[in-house]
Image 1 (cartoon, rainbow, N blue to C red):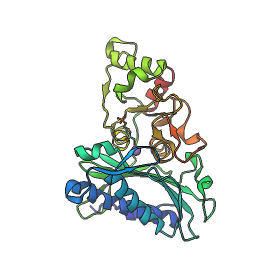
Image 2: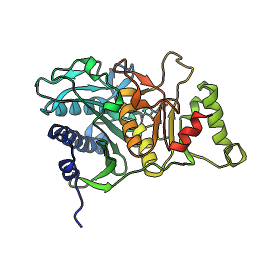
Image 3: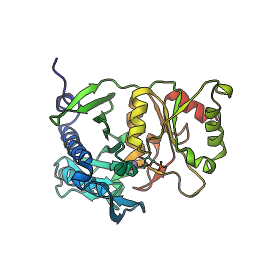
Image 4: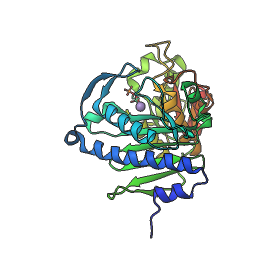
Length: 321
Ligand code: F6P
Ligand code: MN
């Protein structure tokens, strides 16, 4: 049996050649990043960089290394008009003026997992550029406009999960460094008995979120009449991957600690690409159980949002709590 490669899959896609080259470059760079992640201490990839990013977070060495690699590789691709990253204050226009695409990324998601040898990932969102010489305003497009979204998960296997709006497929990185199609037609189950949330924040959540999670914890003895299991990897890529593989729901709600901050996760680098993948797989991706993440008109490049996504019937249950 010949196994289909990501290159063959991309070549057969009914999308513009420019988008094909953007996806090829992103996938190749994720394969390179996988090597650096796997090298860990041997690749000089552990520990803090000593720098603070635009989000006021301390950057790890790997945040900086992965951001540099993705930025350089994508800006060298003639189809790219500009890039934006969770790790960079401002958008970076390409020096060529023939590019059609804007690429936004979280180069290293789940960075608190790096030093403990647990799963991390890379998340990528692709938009059409309204102009070959984009400014920040050109990036301010609703997630519905995305032409592709993907993530790479650096776990026990390295996987790349991709949508171009025609379903969701998963590829596994072979020992030869080739992405091989291993998961066709990925679908999120409608129902689930598994939820993901950082329970240590319980006392800070709004009343409805506390009530909903409280009901899940009561299990078969409570109003839901069934037992729920909980998982929290602390890397959104890994938690979303589990949901794509076996269903589930993932929440990062607003909380009272910083009432003026809408949430922790970033709309442009995390919310939108993950929402595109989840919706394409038949799940729901919302801020509050109702409002679709993909319909939000962004106001700031580094905007944060609350997130509630996953198995459709359970997101509906969350909405009515
Ligand atoms: O990128 C932010 C992030 O690391 C996500 O990947 C993850 O889901 C979340 O933050 C973990 O948050 P916490 O530190 O509260 O567990
Ligand atoms: Mn992240």
